[in-house]
Figure 1 (cartoon, rainbow, N blue to C red):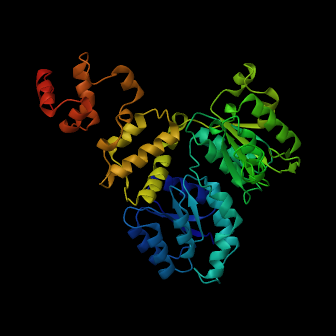
Figure 2 (tube, rainbow, N blue to C red):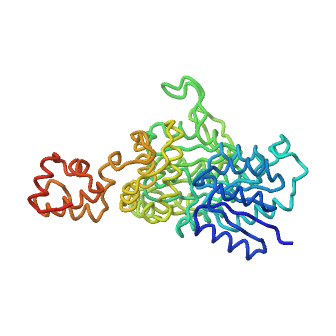
Amino acid sequence: MAQQIHIVEDDVAFGKMLTSFLERKGFQVTVSLTGESARKTLIENNFDLLITDLKLPDVSGLELLEFSQKNTPRTKVILMTGYAEVDTAVKAIKKGALDYISKPFRPEELLMIIEEGFQNDESSEVPGSKITEEKRITSPKANIEKPNFVVGISESSKKFNEYLKLVGPTDMCVLIQGESGTGKEVAAKAIHNYSDRQNKSFVAVDCGAIPKEIAASEFFGHVKGSFTGAVNDKKGHFEAADGGTLFLDEVGNLSYENQIQLLRALQERRIKPVGSNTEIEVDVRILSATNEDLLKAVSDGKFREDLYHRLNEFSIHIPSLHERKEDLFLFIEYFLAEANASLGKEVLGLSKNVEEAFKNYAWPGNLRELKNVIKRSVLLTNTALIPLEVIPREVLFSEKTKNETIDFSKESNEKQLILNALKEADFNKTKAAKLLNITRKTLYNKLEHYQIEL
């Protein structure tokens, strides 16, 4: 008899997609849209597996897990959520969940968890017991399948993440390229975590912040008394990263002299601390990043070609946020959870007006800008949803609107400007007046002058 699965998912389209996929794989699948409906269905049927979203309209997935453990203990449970949250994952596992999977995910990933769960049937163990928890929490698969970053569902994100997984297990030097704020260090950490070096050091260095005079000491260390101010022996970044990964951010900012020193260290796999006569062998994987065109720097004679080829055994381009707009709300959810945890708040999401503004904005500062805007907005929000008035003004208008209307105070096209402001403020006159940098009384006078009826 086919194994029976019950899915609890309030996203109807996503639920249908999972149902269709699992039915093609030979499972019998039913779906509930709410926790209350799921409870009744669980009592009335005998399911092998319950797959539930963490956030449901009426209850949480953890509550549904507890209900299943109490009333249908034979039913295994997998929790889904829109962002990776380690604390919740541990809670779910301790309560007896089979596994935990972060959205977005490929159906094949879920299928693998299901098949392994049924193959390694642990029904004889008491759910939540110490032995069971240790097995699940320390499972190697759990580390691989749950990266601590937003995977993304856009085509550019899928290709980018495939490259991370592909090159991660190798020892190749990787050059990560992309606009400022796209998360190059996060990508480097992902490569490190996909590698056999994941339990060793990951050392990140901002090459643009190191004065060229002390770069050799920073990279290779120094011995006491080797120069003025060297009052103790110091271990350099290469030695600190021995056995692990050294990430060189903004590598294009290194001076030509420092480039020569770096090239020699990469070629010889040996370093010599400043003031020492002894060379130290190091085993370091080099990942580097830049938002500059290094090939142009090479052609201009500012960056050594031999070093460029050493660093660029494999290159990865991180798409800008504008290139993967489909992922925008996944990042918003992730940063919102992060901001709530950091600030001790419980903001649930964005208001409709803010959602529209975020969709229309080009995000030139990429993920760094988005993260900062979300954190600032959460700090200023005292309601369940982030309101329009706490959003920075530059975010409120699309690039198209900016190009057409540079300044709300301009006389030309003033009627259209007022209409734009009213629309952005959801026809709240007080908010519209603030956007226009005029008083509410002045706005009323202009509405009458231009015969704008609301």
